[in-house]
Amino acid sequence: MSFNDIIYNYKESKKLRKMKFTSDQLGIMNRYVREKENWNKHIQESKDFILQSANSKEKGKVVILGSGWLLDVPLQELSEMFLEVLLIDIVHPKRVVKKISKYSNVTLLKADITGGMIDYIYENPNKKEKLLVPIHPFSFNLPENTDFVISLNIMCQLHIILVDYLKNISIFSDKELKEFDKNIQIAHLKILPEKKTCLITDIEEEILTKDDQTIGVNPLIHVDLPVGNFSKVWQWKFDSKMTYRDDYKTFFNTQAIDF
Ligand SMILES: C[S@@+](CC[C@H](N)C(=O)[O-])C[C@H]1O[C@@H](n2cnc3c(N)ncnc32)[C@H](O)[C@@H]1O
Image (cartoon, rainbow, N blue to C red; front, side, top):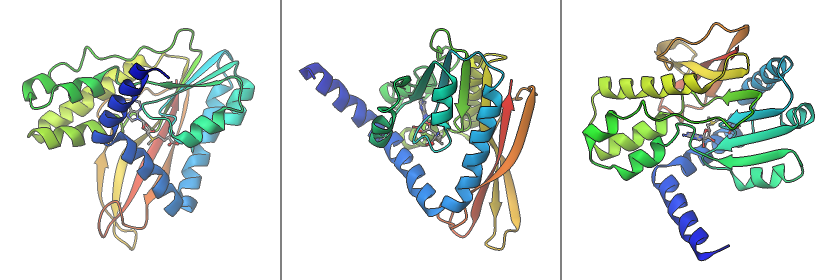
């Protein structure tokens, strides 16, 4: 490793730590450990849907967006079905780097799936007018010759860390932030090619009392999703221990679409 690599990695990891990408990812694993039983159903639903969607696709290159800890990735099966498996995330946990080393056709790529918004926001602090306007030019390019792309529990997440960071550096109205979320989702949907996509995303957040009475539902997707060839909806009991929100449980309604 050269001196430049060290500087680059240091800067890169400082940025991801400051913007809380690293701690957010760690938070996913910590919550999984606490909620294993509830999460396993969601994880199995995701894996089953991915494999069902994979059946009808060309078996060259499969690209997974938001691979993270690989909790919801049927890695063994995909590596047997496809010639190449590419896992994309802004942070790859060390455990995953180690895990994939036994697969000769699985590769990791560190990339920003919004196509550059992370750097843009980090490099333009305190310039509110600059931060909200230029969302449309950002678009992520899928790797060449992608036969199958899986957007994996990430579409409704892409804006969350960015919005939390934005809230720390300036004051935005709810309307501005909602517009921001919507634009990120529009841009994400645009990069997903027809006849080659499996999209899995939370579509609603349900807030419940400790006795499981629903007291509110927040929509998480602000664009129309494709009807697709087939789809499925299930509930993900994300937080039953009331640690995400004090005194309330949080469940997600998740939708998977093959299109
Ligand atoms: C909710 S997790 C998806 C679950 C994941 N498959 C797992 O098993 O951990 C979202 C993942 O998206 C990644 N992520 C969030 N924003 C991103 C971005 N702009 N570009 C790339 N990855 C991003 C996070 O690092 C995290 O690993």
